[in-house]
Length: 405
Image (cartoon, rainbow, N blue to C red; front, side):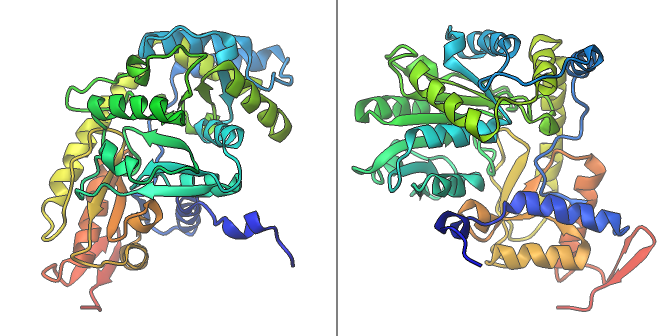
């Protein structure tokens, strides 16, 4: 069977594949622990649920405008003014089926085939394939100093005549690294001088720890929204624990937002009105759930880091935010895919191989689940990896025996 060149170049999302594998194992009754997911376990805000119920009770669930309902745009405008310090108009906003779709239609609006988009590595797994869907070339950039914190000169060295855009995800998935204000200021200034687009993937921007506060890339631009090539991406999935609602948005100049709306209109039309109403409820409602989730995540992070530091040979950089830790397991196995498969097969713990994020030898471990899942999962991993572990491990009523060296 003949497939298109794009279809042949795209592989399945490894994180979504892991979610599916976890569901299959649970369906079989296996005591799997999923430490690879990016989905908070807390409930969606009551204001979001009530808004959806009230909308559903009207029975008037119809098509939505391609760029989002006015009520949601108004909420996003208010949110942008509060957290980004910038007043924007409805024409500067598009609501999409999740932040992922917002990024995708942004790329489709600005990238031509064979043009390049740059992003620091480690990177979110979907960036390279999203670029390929546009016929563009993904250009990951690993910081030369070996840290998770890029410097402007790391980026500058990869910018060429075909560079069209840079995408920055801070706090970062998978590392949890929050980039410094100095770096963001430098990258905004650099993109303006080079006249290239800067996409800020801010989906985790309020889920940060240790007293850090979110800041806005708009603080460092010399241009108005209409003159700027800055595109801000955000959504309700992470901070409001509303992953299944699939509502995200983008803020940018009118020309690029119009192009994004045109593309989205032909792809999917506007997101579900019902889910947009829920997003309005979350954005306009009581915000205590965000802080509650942030505090829970910070506590979970601290527990996970303490457990990981009990391993011999593991190198850990403490995450500044998100709900991921990107730990170096290369002392045990340099092939992260092989290591991840080993942990699933031996102790039914799911992690995401670092290879998928552009850095082998690492595993992404999520701490957004229950504390018991984190502690039991790490206990199982240590038992499987540490040659000094006892010969037996009980998982519920099931006894595992070490039959490997």
